[in-house]
Amino acid sequence: MLTKNCLPLESYPDRSYYGGPAHECPHCGAVFWYQERVKSASAAATRKIIYNLCCRGGKIEFKPHKKPPAPLAELLRFDGDARSKKILRQI
Image (cartoon, rainbow, N blue to C red; front, side, top):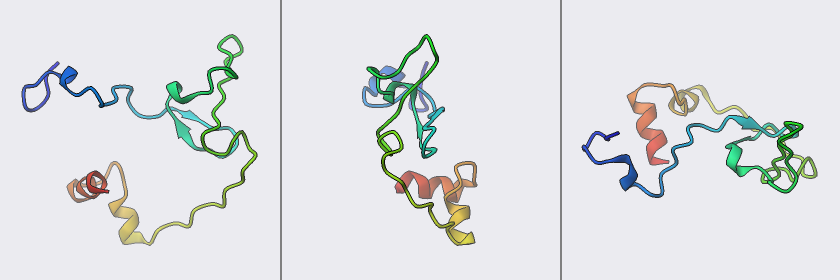
């Protein structure tokens, strides 16, 4: 597979090819990649996947974030227009 610049994707060793994070912490709702699980506590047989990089398994309670004002919320959309994609790349 080639990129826009006709370079093979393998030429970017630090880039993730796992796609987006698809697993959620049951305690705080943080999203993770499967590879970020706690391997010693996760059990594939019971399909129980443990994450504790966020709230330490429910030991730390986070206050909910306030919603940003409408103009900023539009710029922070992942599925937004070209301007929002540029902002997200530069953050």
